Structures are given as structure tokens and as C-alpha cells.
Length: 130
Image (cartoon, rainbow, N blue to C red; front, side):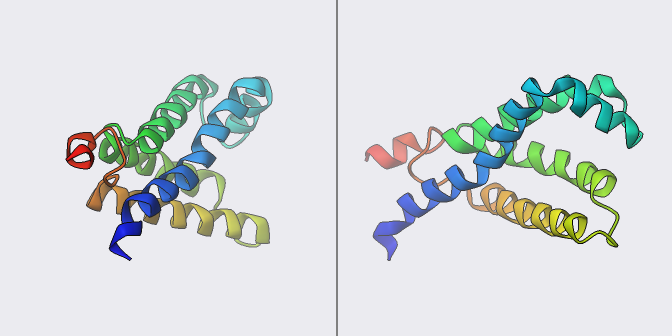
């Protein structure tokens, strides 16, 4: 099972980062509606650009395993307020599911923070090549 660990870590980072990268790209192509949604929830619309940057850079950091611990922490820092602001109406089942999904994402990101990206990563490339 130990032989699978580097590949499992890589696969986990791919799955974990996909939602952030897709979300960042989606916000680029639906900027006006995303900005309107943000403003309707009391979030200033000008935060759209920093949001896109955080999603893409954090997601790519985790995906590539480059400064992955920092990228994961940045994404957790983003998810906490985003979850509390946008997914706080538990009467709506979809909001409760989104809230719980974000908790799961935070758990995965905290695992990357605690244990690193694994051997198949830019952060650990010297370890993997030995």
C-alpha cells in the first residue's frame, strides 16, 4: 500500500483542486452575474477579481504541488467566509449540502497543509527523484 501513496496523493490533489480551478474559470466567464450575486449577499462586487485570483492560484498551487501548503491555507481562508456568507440558509437542502461540501473541502485542504503534497509534486521533486 505504501507504493500507492505518491500516486494517491497526486490523485487527491487533482480531485481537490479541480473545483477551485473550475470555479475560478467559471467566474471569469460569468463575471457580471457572479458580481451581482455577491452584491446581493452583501459582498462588495470589486472582490470578484481577488476571488478569481485566489481560486486559480490556490487551486493551481495545490494541483501542481508548488507551495501547496500555502495554497491550501489560502483556500481554507477563502472558504471560511465564503461558506458562512453564501451557504448559511439551512432550511434550503442545497445550501446545507453546499455548506457540508465546503467543510469536506476544508478538511482535504487541511490534510495538504498538515502532510504536504506528497512525493509527486514540485515541492517534493528532489525527494521523488532520489
